[in-house]
Length: 399
Image (cartoon, rainbow, N blue to C red):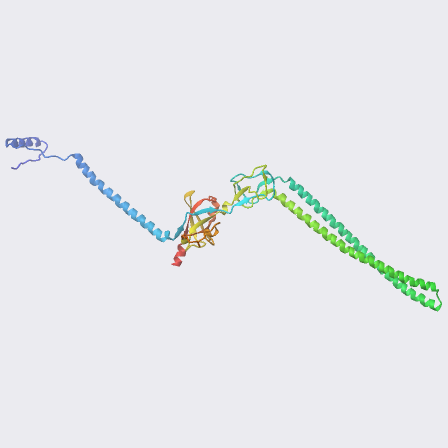
């Protein structure tokens, strides 16, 4: 049995529906109204359909981004990353200078503070120098005395030279007298033999020869003695000269000791580990402080031997520092150590025993920092760093 329900306008809808219901009631059939879908459920289904589309879009975009990132990093690793060798067993180092006095004494002044930056030649501390000044004055007096001794000996030598000249002149006179006496003796001997002169006169002439010869012998001995005296005086001058040199050396040492009373900075750097105090008595060689040349820092990285196949001097290095996360410092490979670390150990292992375990050795690599990095002064000795050496060019040549 068919039921005819008509949808009409708002004006006739109620009457027509009422008539239809009455007709069905007459026939004994109760008309049940069609269930209508709730408006909230219909709206929820529509919203669910709409929400599925953006979610799928987000998942798709995320997957594409992950794949793109993986591709990018994979390409970067293949092009660059696989050629970089890095290690975390690396530290910043510098050739620190231990400041110690060269003389003993009491500290009179301390001119620097902890962590102060100083220049080469800048005074760091002063030791009481009064004793050293007195020693210098005494050394200068000894030098003056030695110089006076040399002058006196030189004057004696000059006088002796005059004495020698006089002795030679006297000897020449004696020889002239001898010649005259010989000639006079010949004359008087001839006259006496002919009876023209007295025999006594001839005898006197002969005796004059003997006297002249005796004078020659005497004055010759005098000359020889004067000459020998010259050698003695020269030896004394040499001795006085040596004494002068010794006194001058003592004076120079006294001057050095006085200069050592002021302790100077040998290089540019920063003061650290300062232990000196005013009034403290210090011995020679006692460490008073350390001077760290921060502008000359470098990195020592202990790489595994298997990582150094393509590493050589000059290759660029990127350095990460624990103290400055995210910041990259730059440098280059300076040199490789001539041996592994165990070769320089105090007690190197003895592999000749029965027990042996192969261990990959580490070889120190010195990394020089670029000038800009050193000028920044941010890297301090002892810092932990992680260097990465780019070996791409060298590896490409080997392949």
